[in-house]
Length: 83
Image 1 (cartoon, one colour):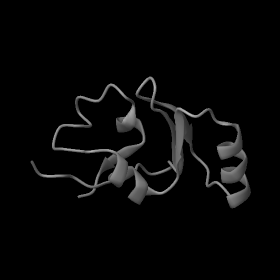
Image 2 (cartoon, helix red, strand yellow):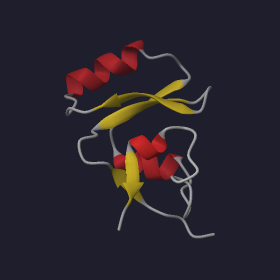
Image 3 (cartoon, rainbow, N blue to C red):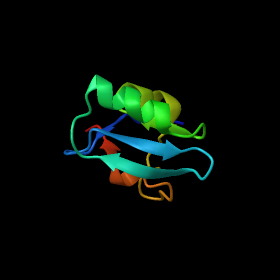
Image 4 (cartoon, rainbow, N blue to C red):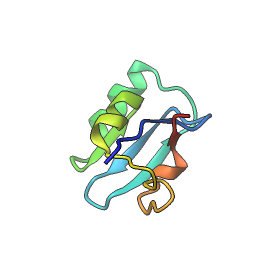
C-alpha cells in the first residue's frame, strides 16, 4: 500500500492529538515559540501528543489515499495531502 505525505493546512501551526480517544483536541493557528511548546508539553496529560513538526506527523500516522476523506479523528482539519 502506498504511503502518502501530508502537510499542515494553511494557517495551522500544530495540534494536540489525544491518543486515548484518537482525535485532534486542540488546533494552533498561530506559530508557537519554543517557550510555548515547553509550557504546553509540561501541562498536557500523558495520552496527549503535541505536533508542531510535520515530519513527526508523517512518521506517527499512516496516511493512505483515503485516510483524510474517511477521517473520524479530525486530522482532515489540520493536514492535507502534499500535491
